[in-house]
Length: 219
Image (cartoon, rainbow, N blue to C red):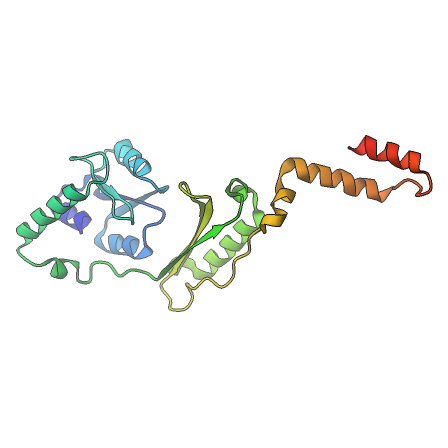
C-alpha cells in the first residue's frame, strides 16, 4: 500500500522497495504488476536498513509488520506507521478496505520450525540442499522453498509457498535425531572412521596383548 502510494507520487526512490526473504510471494507479484522493483535481504531490520542506505532507498520492511520509512526513521515504528497510514487515508478520501482491495493476493504459505538439530551444520547438508533444489524446480515460478537457521531460536525454519492449491503443503521432513547428532561432529566422526578402519584388519583374537597395543595405537 505504501509502496504504491509513494510510487504514484514519485517519492519511491529507485522505484524500489526492500523486503526480507520471508515476505510472501504474493507481495512480489503485486509489486511486479505495479512495476516496482523488489530487493530481498536476510531477516532482520538491520539488513533491511543496510539495503536502504546502500542504495539511497526510502521504503522497506518485514512480513512481521516492521516498516521502515527511511526519510523519517531508521527502524520499524508502529506509531509512525499508523500516522503515515492515516495521512494516506485522508489524502485518498476513501476507506482502507477500498485501497487494499485487489492490491495483494497472498500466496498460501506454510512455515514449520524444526527443533533438535545443529543449525551450524545446515550449510553442509548436501541432501537438504538437493531436496530444496528439486522441489523449487518442480514449482518453477509458482512457488518457492526456503530453509534457514533461525537467528533467535535453536531451530531450522522451513517455509514453502505456492500459488497452486495443494502443492504448497509440506509432505515430508527429515531431520537428524538427537541421539545421532554426535556422529556429525568432526571429532566424533574422525574417531568413528578410525574405529571402522581398525576393524578391517583386527589382530588375532587369541593375542590379547597385541589387541591391547592395537587399540592403544588407534586411540
